[in-house]
Image 1: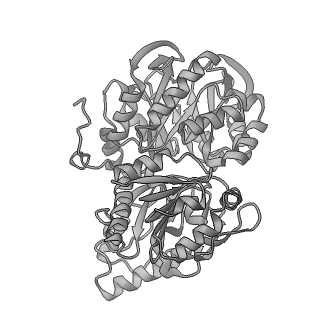
Image 2 (image 1 turned 90 degrees about the vertical axis):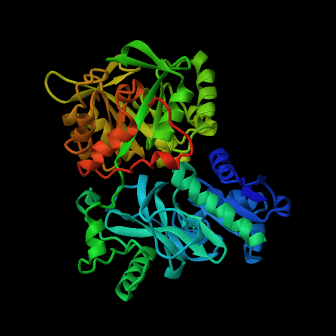
Image 3 (image 1 turned 45 degrees about the vertical axis):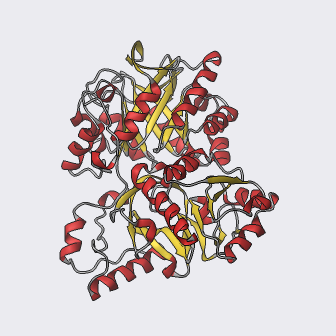
Length: 206
Length: 321
C-alpha cells in the first residue's frame, strides 16, 4: 500500500485519483502510526515551505519521515514535496528542510517571470524508470516560484528550461525521487509518470 | 520576456550514445543543478533538428465555461445568455481533447447559487487531470479557500479586488501568488485607453485597465485574465491593442479573452497581442473547432504549443466527431 502524507498542504484528491488511475492502493497518512503498513510514500504539497515544515512537525511526521527514508522506503515528492527534501529553503527567511538531498531551495531568478506557471518541457538526464514510455521533451504542468539548486548534480534526473536557465525538474537519490511539476495535472503524460512510480514500487516489493 | 527570444539547444534525442553527446548531457545536467545557462555546443545534427522547435513555456489554450445556475451558457457582450451544455461533460471533453487548462466563471454568482457552484466544482474536480481556474462572485479569503478546497487550482477575483486591493495581497500571501488570478473586464474609452468595469461588466469604475493590471501584479497576482468587453461574444477577434498594452506592462502571464471567432484570432493574440494564453468559449463549445485543430493550426505557424497526444493513446474516444 502507498501512503499519501496528508499534512494540510493543499487538496490531495487529484494526486489520489491520478495514482489510483495508475493502479495504486492508497491510504492517507496523518500521523506516524499510519506509516506501519505502507511500502512506499508520496509527499505532495502546495503552499509555503515553513508552513509545511511546521505541519509535518506538529503531526509528528517530521522525524518519522526521515526514519522511513533512511530505512530505504521509496518516496515520491511532488512540487513542495520535492523542495522539502533539500537542506533548506530561502522562502520567507531561511527554513530547514528534511536534508535528504544536499542543496538549497531558492526563488527563481529575476530575469524570468515568477511564478513559473504553465506547461514546460522536461528532458531526462539519465535513464529513469519513471520516464519509461515518456518521450524526451514532453510537456508537464508547472506551478511554482521556488526551485531546488542541487549541490550534487548526479541527483538531477531530469531538467526543465526556463528563460535562459535550467533547473532540476526531477531529482533522484536511490529510492527517493521527486518532481517539481504536477504530474497529477499533466494529463496522460503525467498519469504515465505516476503509473511508472506505482509499478516501480510494486516491482521493488517482489 | 527573455524566454521569447531564446533559442536553446537540446539534449540528444536518443540518449547519450556518442562520447560528445554524453559530455553534452553531463554539462547540461551540471548546469541544471545550479540553474546555470545551458551549454550550447557547436550545432550537431541532433541539436539543430530540435533547436527549431524551441523549448519555452507552451502558450496555453483555455476553454472557458460560463456557468449560470449549474449550466454552461454563452452570452454576447455579457448579455443574452444561450445554453451550451452540462459543465461536467464539457470539462471532461476538453480535458481529453488536450486543453491546457479550463476556466469556470460563475457569471451569476449570488449567495443562493454559491452552494450549487461549489458542488459543481467538486464534480468537475473529480474528472479532471489538467489544472482549472474558477471565478465569479469571489469576495473574501474564505470564498477563495472554499473554492480551493473544492478542488479548484486557481481562483480569480475581479470586483472585490478593485473594491479592496488589499485582498490580492492577503490572498497571495496566504494561498500563494500562483493560485490567484486577477480578472479585468475592460472597455475602450472614446478618448483612448481602457476603463475597468465591475459586477460582470455592469458598472464602470474610472480605473485605467493597464494601470490596474500593474497594481494587481505588484500586489502578488499570479496572472491576469484580461477580457475585452467590446469584443466579448462578437467573434471579431481579441482586442490586440489592449492585450499587448497589458502584456507589456506586467511580467506575469496575461490570458487574452473576449472576441475569439476563428483560429487566426488565437494566433494574433499570442503573437501580435503578446499574450501567454488565450481563453475562448464559442469556437469550442459549438464544435466549430476542436482543441486539437486549434493547436495544430498554431504549431504549424511556429507558436510553442503542447501538442495533443494521438487519439489512440487515450484508450477512449473523445466523442463528438
